[in-house]
Length: 459
Image (cartoon, rainbow, N blue to C red; front, side):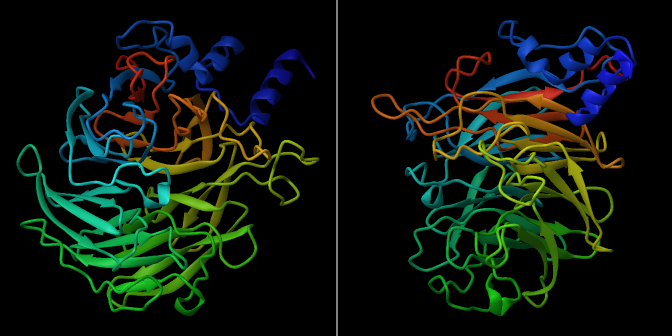
C-alpha cells in the first residue's frame, strides 16, 4: 500500500470525508480542526481564504451577558434546546443560567433581547430547571419550563408579548421539556421527560392570539384525555425518559424519540403518535443508539441523535473497554421503517436538518474518540463535535470541534457545560452552537453562541 493509500485509509477509519481535491492531507486535517486554527484571530468574523475548501468553520461568536436572574456566577453555563424561526430568521435559545430565552438576529449575528417569562432558571438539577424546549408556529413562540409549565409569546410585535402559561401536571415540580408544534391543527405536543413514567401532553393553541388552552392536568402517573403516559399500557415502556418530538407535515403525525424501551439499555426507538386519537399507533425499534435528538430531513427521513456510544460487541464503550467504539447516528424512514446507521459521530443531544444545504447537523457533546468516564466525573475540558452529515448520501462529511467545560466545585464553581445544542438558518446556512463561558473562544467570557458556516465566497 502506498503512502497516499494509507492516508486515504486513515481518513476513512476516522469517518472524515474530505471536502477538497487531493492537494494536501494537511488541508483535510485543517478542515476538521478549523476551530483551533481560527481562534488565533481577534474579536471579529473569520473566513477561509482558500475557496477550494467548502468546509464548515467558525464565522463569528455572539456574546451572551449575564442577567439579574443568573444562577451560575453571572455567566452562561447551562442551556438547552435552540431553534431558528425560518420565516423571521430569528434564533432562540433556552438559557437556563440566565433564566431567559436569548433572542438573536440570525442575519447579523446580533443579540436582540434576553426574553423573560417567569422562567425557573437553573436549580442545580436540570430536571427541575427551565427554560428547556423552544419552538415556533404561526406568529407564536412556545417555551417549556419548570414546574411542568408551558409559556407562549406573541412575536408579531417586538419585544414578544407574553400570551399565556399553562401547566401539564398538577403539583409536579419537574420540568416540561421538549415540544413540537402541529401546524395543521394548532396543537403542541409537550414532553415531561423527568417523571416516571414520562408523559406527553396535547395543548391547543389559538393561532391568532397565541393563547394556550389549559389541558387536563392531573398529577403525574394519572391518565387524562390530553395526556399519553409513556408506559407499557400505552404501547411503549419508556424506562429512561423521553426526548425530542417532531411533527411530520406529510402524514400529520407526531414522532417521539425514546432512549430506552424496557430493561435492555441497547433497545430504544421512535414512536408515532396520532394527534387525532392521542394514541401511539406504531413503534420503530432502534438498537445501540439511545435516541435523543430527532429532526426531519428530506421526505419522511428523520435523523436520530444517538446519546450513547456502544462498542462493537454491543456493550457500553468505556475507558477500560477491550472492544472498539462504534459511534453512530441513525436515519429512520418512517414511511418504510428502514433504518440506516451513519457511523462516526459521538454522543449528542439536539440534531437539526438544514434544507438550505441538504445536511444534518449534530451537537455531539463528546467526540467519537472519547470514551465514557467511568469515574462518574463531569466531562473533561476539550473538544465536543459539530457533526455534518450529508442527508442524501447518509454519510459524515465533516467533524468540527466545538467546546465543553467541566464542572468546577467550591468557591467560584460552576456546573459542567456541554456543547449539545444546535440550530440552523436555512436562508444563509449559518449554524448556531451555544458554548459555556470560557476564555478560549473570542467574546465568550460570559458565554456565547458560536456561529459556524461556509465562507460567503465559496459557491
